[in-house]
Length: 341
Ligand SMILES: N[C@@H](CCC(=O)N[C@@H](CS)C(=O)NCC(=O)O)C(=O)O
Image (cartoon, rainbow, N blue to C red; front, top):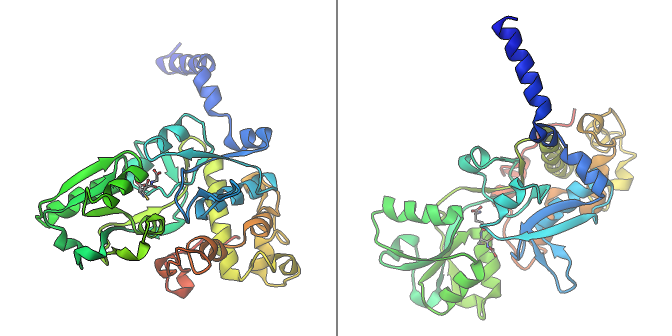
């Protein structure tokens, strides 16, 4: 036997003997279907992204992404089990297969997208890091925070950007680091720190929790890029493609003017883009391992991206954040989805 032939035989035997290889091939799509439920990792409670309302229903932009995936895959957006994860637990929960997807205001970074074993499917919210201060402090810019104590949450990009910002501006500062955001907020409100820092959307969200929201100002400085998006494990290309196209379908639906209210009427549309989106033309579900009406089901259940945005973080929500960079590219924003074709 040549060296090459021996190597081939050895490799084949090793593959058969290694149980890990077989189980790595257990596709997420198959397990979600078998279970009849999507397991979605979300934030413990961050208004606008994922938080339980007074009836215990998970609400928010990320929570609706979980519903959209369940609608596409299982035909029912209610078939979701939400798993509340902290900043610290979120990645291990996904890696250990406890979750099918993580949709938890998580920033897409190189380290997380490579060494951490995750694959980000896109950006469902373009954010940036900011600071909140008490109005009474009369601070107008983050650069006036020299010598200040800043409260921050551990295991976040926030903690790292904070250090970069003060170092590159040659400013002295102190931090108080907390594992949970409510602990950090308590410290900020008890005047143990002068400022609290996180993603700007999070600042809007936590300001609502304060006793007197009007006593706090979000400073205009944005010190980082925080592209937030859902992530899946790296070992399942089919699942990665499905979750990515759920996101693209939400954007394409908005671009084509397909809404939760008009989606049934739109089934009769003669516009080619709409017909392909809703599965009236072509065989686009097949390549994903889904039925051709996969995108119809998403829109029927949660509406399009713009509707989700308006409902949870935009004008129809208490956060009332302007659409800004989160508008479609056709409106001067950054959201741009590849075509269904
Ligand atoms: N986008 C940043 C920060 C995400 C993050 O966890 N932010 C905090 C502050 S808004 C949070 O969600 N805390 C809620 C909690 O842990 O209860 C990251 O991915 O590291």
